[in-house]
Length: 352
Image (cartoon, rainbow, N blue to C red; front, side, top):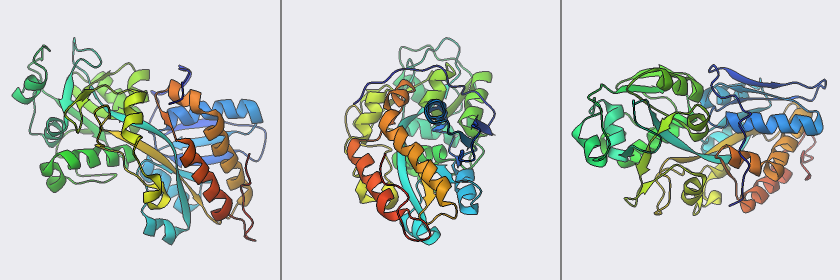
């Protein structure tokens, strides 16, 4: 996997309606909205792209559900979602979908004296916490996994997303895969009826709430945990191995993914096999119209995405995201060249 340069330039602890607003004195600024999961890297790419091209990006970090609504309403040039649309929905709406980058979702906790990576959880225990079956940090199930950690007799304060969220989709997909009880009682979706806990908007909101609440546990994209200096936990993966959330572990989970197996490259990476695999790995997708009303705006967006694929890997890894494999990028750009066209059927993308 390619090597990356870490950057601390991205502001992450922002309000849920975070917006990248990198404006240029040009009419060609690109508009998008959606997932908070990739917000840190989209902000980093946007800053570098503006410096190189003068083209700005306005991205509203409002959650995957909001991004899907906005692209369907045609109020933005592209939508962004961590929950891929299924083939029939893509076909029915005339949208093209492609993955931009991958990362990891991590449990984060606020426990005095516990350092990042010191606590380990497994899937069934995590599910029972979010089901409200485990309510104290010194519960026997947590103690069994952490015999050398001093666990407080403290109530667990669950923090979850309140908005429609692709991060929630991937989190609940994982819990449903490891817990029949979760799958039956709560299910898998961008928004669910949470059995317990308090809601917060965006990865930003969850990160902030966990940081401010003693005894809290939540789930966020890894970049938010690192940038906000939150205590993340390790996890026991499908092979029964304890793993840390790292770019290598996220890459291991994605190593055997068959991206062509699903319409719109909609592959779910949760709970993948492999001794090194992080069990809550996820991709994030872009949605654009195949025949957009504003062909010029979509052309500019595709140029930005192509630039990000070609020049954004080091920036992605610096924030602990995993770039898409070269073969997937080649396939995606080939799809752009034949499927995304103007009113006369002329392709909008012809390469960088």
